Amino acid sequence: YKAELVRSNDGTVRVYLYDSSMNPLELKDFEKSAKGSLGAKVKGKYKTEAFSLTLEGNAFVGIAPNAPEKPFNLDFQFKDNTRELLTAFDNLD
Image (tube, rainbow, N blue to C red; front, side, top):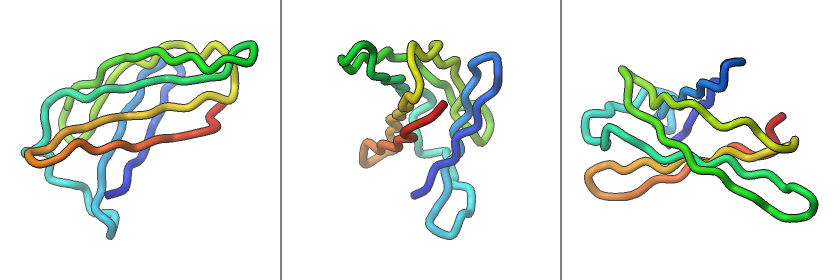
């Protein structure tokens, strides 16, 4: 699978999931919520903050916390009927 991250200025994040040919995934077999995590290195220590996303139409949508430092990472965990999936977006600013 592949994932696309769309971020808005108000902190809203949308994650779209695709197959290897970039066709949108059928999300009916996915749980309706997902976990997000924002991580950044602050004064030499890596800190994370969790947040949640919900399935809205063809995307998982949530409000990410403000990043304490740049660059930062966003990680997302999704579950379908058979497995847990992870996607990560690193070195964001």
